[in-house]
Length: 273
Image (cartoon, rainbow, N blue to C red; front, side, top):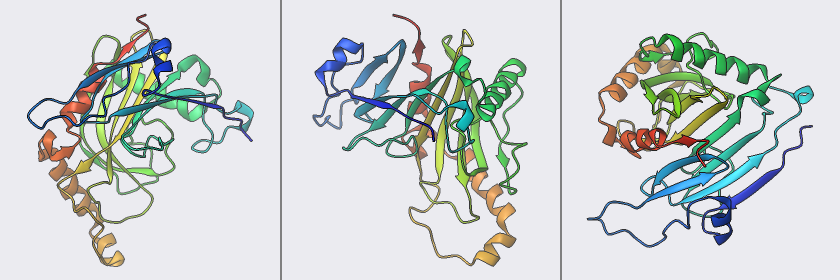
């Protein structure tokens, strides 16, 4: 079994000032006519700007990861540092809970973790060639050929994606997109999709992951009753219609706004101070 040690640091502790992390995030309500506060978060050479509209708190975890000998893709992971975003206690451990967050992997430490290394190589090839990132639906959820790079290794397939685009800021370059990760063929809800950023630092040493659950107003809040057989028969068309709806939606049709999430990614800094 892999041994994982997690060190959790929360911004509301004054101790974080000594660790080069931003001061306590404000808990006071922000008047609706004023912009939400934006906080500088920094730890161990990695930083970003957090708009309180996205989340008010950050939990920083350093995870040792598994031994290569125990590696099982999707179940054991290499070492990483995670910046988990949340509002309410207790702080979640998963990027797919609460408001998501960022992960930072040392690429040199991925040796032997074959899926993670393959993902890094696929992303590097995309960034070198810069092909158009097209809208896609993937009715065969087990087929990885048309997937875009995604870490952490997900147990479920990429069913559909939308709004894929490149993001570069000098410190990190990568791709951002909306993706549905599902094991079953069922209708989407407002909470099905996540915004993800997958990036590589300018020096090629660091892989940066952002995973942020979003609410998409183009879908119902709750799963509506459906006939599984009838739905399976028109699944491909449903995927096309759903992705077209996502593509035509404004950034503010999502919560948090896709523009805010892009801005968070573009604020990333690495290795400065």
